[in-house]
Amino acid sequence: MALAESLVVIGIALFALVVLLTIYLATSRYKLAPSDKILVVYGNVKTGGAAACYHGGGKIVWPLIQHYAYLDLKPMTISINLEHALSQQNIRINVPSTFTIGISTAPSIMSNAAERLLGLPTPQIEDMAKEIIFGQLRLTVASLSIEQINQDREAFLRLVSNNVDTELHKIGLYLINVNITDITDEADYIASIGAKAAAVAIADATVDRAEAARDGAVGKAAADRAREIEVANNEAESDKGQKAAEAGRRVFVQQQEALAVEGENQSRASIASYNADLAEKEAEALQRSEVAKRRAQSEIEKAQYNLEGERLRAAEIAREEVSKQQIEIAAEAEAERQRRIARGQADAILARYNAEAEGTKAVLEAKAAGYQSLVKSAGGDAKAAATLLMVEKIEEIVARQTEAIANLKIDKITVWDSGNGNGGEGGSTANFVSSLIKSLPPVHDVAKMAGVDLPDYLGSMKEE
Image (cartoon, rainbow, N blue to C red; front, side, top):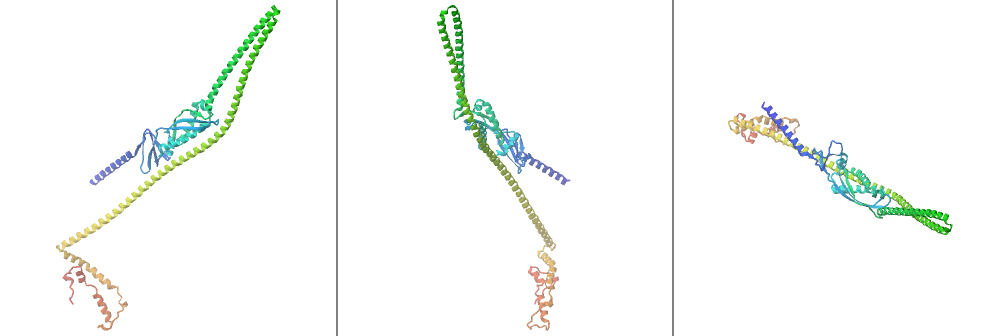
């Protein structure tokens, strides 16, 4: 019963220890995702990708098979001073602007950031984003005319935002805001557009004034002519003598009509000259536009090639970084496995040595207890106890002596006698055997060598 209770207590204690270890492991490896950061867990993750991203909340990061890092969500402001960018009309313009970007929390874009930006310092991320923004801003400018860029700034900003934002998503970033301060060109074309608009307005006003003056002069001349004709007719009917006066009045009317026609012709000439200038400028603009289109197409292809190269380099850097970290994790796991194997082998060797030591100790203790009992049975006389032990070994000693000569084959032994034997024929062989037996140490001599005197009942040595 006591043993069962002890086993129950031990089981409860082990269970409590396992629970405490589990709680400690969970609390020490539970990582929170702050509101201004993204928690990236990589290694052996269940999402199937290279890493799992968490914004808000927390996640248990298992040791050996997983690792973690953070991506900062703080916005980054980048100044883009775009200069000498070709427009659709082959006119180079300057577009100074400021872009505010950041790492997106959208799931798919977060994954791109984990794959391509994890472990990169902020300046390197800004440089990568700057190259993308420069390329997309140049492409956008090349696809528009100066009039489209200058007259509708809102549409221009919207187009820039769409193009830049789409490319930033590929590396895990997104566009927060864009602000273009001013747009200028090297040929003062934008200023000329304003001057041209002012000149056109002034010319239109001049034409309107000339047409009004012409209409007034023509109307006045017609009114005067009608009035004079009516007066002349009335006077002709009343007084034929006034023909000279009537002729003079007609000359005056003709002069007024000539002045009105001259004013009208001058107005028409001015309009024709303006139209000719306008047609000439349109032809020149069309020619420049064709040249600009071809050069812009070349610049677009070159920019796309450079941008694709940058994107491939960024992807390769991110892949190499993730591969290096995975190799480090695998190396750490293999080192831990080797350490555990070594500890297990050391424990096994130590256990074997302990068992051998315990066995040797038990044998020695048993022999010591036996010797102690033997001495006690001999009345405390250690010498008598040694004699008893020697007596037990006499049989074995005699057997060994007998075994030493038991296998001798007398017929195979040749004895060379010098003729001094006294036993007659065969005396040499007999003497040899007798000498051989005498050469074996007697039992009493063996006992004396061990410092033990055999008891009298075993006989005694004859003194010669």
